[in-house]
Amino acid sequence: MPSFHYSGRDTRGGLVEGSILAANHGAAVSQLQQDKIVVTRLELEVVSKTKVNINLRIFKKKVTLDDLVLLTRQLYALTKAGIPIIRAFNGLAESTDNESLAEVLNGLADSLIAGSELATAFRQFPKIFTPIFVSMIHVGENTGRLDLAFQKLTAHLELERETKKRIKSATRYPLFVTSAIVLAMIVINIMVIPNFASVFAKLGADLPLATRILIASSEFTINYWWLILIIIFGGGFAWFRYISTPEGLLWWDGMKLRIPLFGSLFKRIALSRFSRTFSMMLASGVPILKALSIVAESVGNKSIGAAIGDMYRGVERGERLTSTAAATGLFTPLVLQMMSVGEETGSVDTLLDDVADFYEEEIDYELKQLADSIEPILLVFLGCLVLVLALGVFLPIWDLSGAMGSK
Image (cartoon, rainbow, N blue to C red; front, side, top):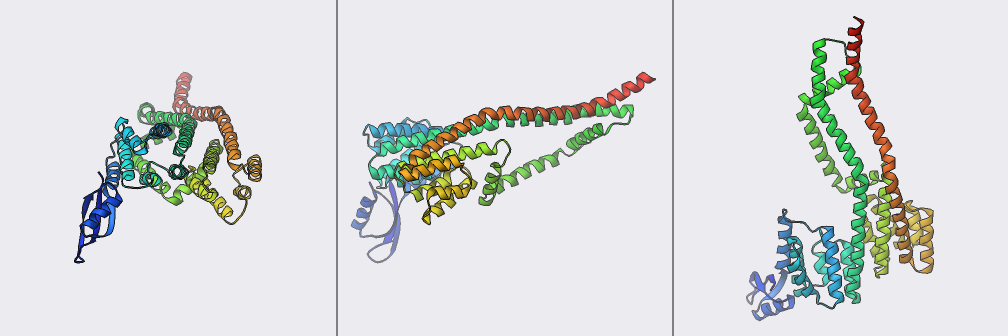
């Protein structure tokens, strides 16, 4: 049974406070009134404790996107079968092996027992359930089609998972190659070049410029490694602190859209997410202004989110959705034409689904072309690196060999 913390006045007007166990909010008020206490404040304690426990137990397994996909699938099946939602939460909490998710489900069940609405209960866990999730639950709760809301959320979360996989696949190869190059440079600077430098020093020969540069970089790395670490970790810390601010994140998200080869891919992924999510919310009956405001916060790119915010303000002024979308400069003429047809026929949600399909086809094509575009660039970079090392290491050896041969 949930616990409520209360504050109030007794018959003498004195301030009293404490905790009371009751089945719900109304029952707690009735009990306090029977004790002749005028309630001024009454709060549920169980949910807040659950939230504190989730935030403090950082070593527990977090609730992942895969967990949410499985959860919405299960909730869809249970609600469609007519299982009461509180019973569904309690059953899923007992069957899951994720302790954090079990605490969330128990917290949701306790909130419903206390008399909260389902959307309000989900809203108490903003780090797990996004505004889109809560809005869809709110619509399903008000229309009596909660099973349909969970079905759409399952499809939405699966697309989110697929989008993240696409981003990882696009960045995995260049990150792996770059990391290998950096590691190779560290090994060469610390272990290989010093051995050659000692040999050249014993011979006392004049060294080429490339060799002197390599030896100087190696000596700097060995003598001032602590300074390099301070610069790397200090710069990384300052960088992450800056992009964690609203201004820094907006700047960085804008820069990501201008990165060669990757910028257009990130842009199409964000626009595909916008089109699919916006279509889902419109089809569910969410008002267009509310849908735009929610999607602007959850599109995954603050720069594109700001452009969607401009669309929100334009629609709020009475402008057409297509004209506000054209003003952002994000959409191609073909996409704008599809939006315009959707507005004229009253089927914006259906046309936006087609727009999302169009973007996803382009994303698949770009991902296939990305590896072919990156490989030549990396090969040229590696070739230049090998050339510098070859000139720096082998030129003095060739010079010495030539000098000894002439003698």
